[in-house]
Image (cartoon, rainbow over all chains, first blue to last red; front, top):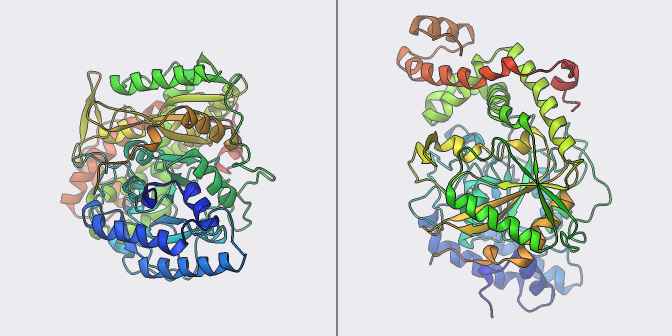
Length: 469
Length: 61
């Protein structure tokens, strides 16, 4: 039998539905692998293995009774530790919340449970999800399963590392500036930042309310689509919730990219860009052309505003969300994260309002580009995973901070609130995964997933297993 | 670029925004705030005449 922990969530769920393996047997395999490797990987802050095994037993009983919950029945998932889970501590990656136990599930956790998936624990996150590296002073930085000396990326570091390590085939992340797509790219998995508001934020600790977006992470685009079928639902309890009624993301996966026009921005993205990343991206574009897509250049000068807008709005809103706690209890936080929050206190109301107006102009420009092309394609991250303690890096002769190198490209689609998926598209000479990012117009998440699935049908990067265990 | 923040000016500003941290902490924060203000400075040159503030800050778009 194929090793269960290497399977995609959809493949595993199909085996469970066909009674080729029980949910209990599958869960036991994941628990045993995690028992063996978690001390080295550090993907979790809190494991719930006993409850997961009990849930798997219940899932088997439901299946035997002819009442499977849905297409993810029996498949395990990890939950980033900024999502509430009833009766399980939710630390937000911070010592400030080390003992906090919410009474209710976050909406996204509840929706995946309803679809039959089983949570296996709370995964590591950067403190309050405010950093793209994966560093966490209190709970440790997870291992990047592809490179022991490399960052896993963040802030959804534990979900990315856990999928790559085979601890669970799918998981929940959140993406404010790239926090689903960055660890997906660095850990060699697939991750979607949906359209802003398409997945409920209810029960998820906020960072920046203009951008915070719940997103699925998994091995394949097919898994992401199945997760989106469960997750995308209007929620009156979330003030920014939007709806896309009647969309079946999984049913829309097939059809390929023949006839699609894929735009490649000519500004901003490329300076600086690692040469291996650039080569992998060019090869990915040729693959999409082979599949029938037409690749064309797109001019978007507004992209040069990306860093200024994202820094101003995110930092100010982070201070709005957590400033009082940080000023009162900052001495118990990671000093670097504390300073980042405190910096937001120094942004004036007029600067924040100007940045929000510029964000709308920026989003309108990106939306106009999607009237000329079906998708925008870019690398996900400007360089392969930095070293774990690397503060700055040299990319194509330019010295940049590692944080900026990680966030530079992904932020475009937080500012424009558009759907954006990262899928593996190759490896560096050092064996580190590289990511391709495909993005579409707002509420065109199904198209983005369809293109990602077409790419994965023609390539096998997403099937590679990290060299662990 | 914004004007350089001297330690005294920064300490006053910090008090005004509610930060009562000790001087040593403020000295680690000061260069970070200076750098952040530099990064958001390009905002001044971005044209936003076509976007009423109530469309943007209210989250309508």
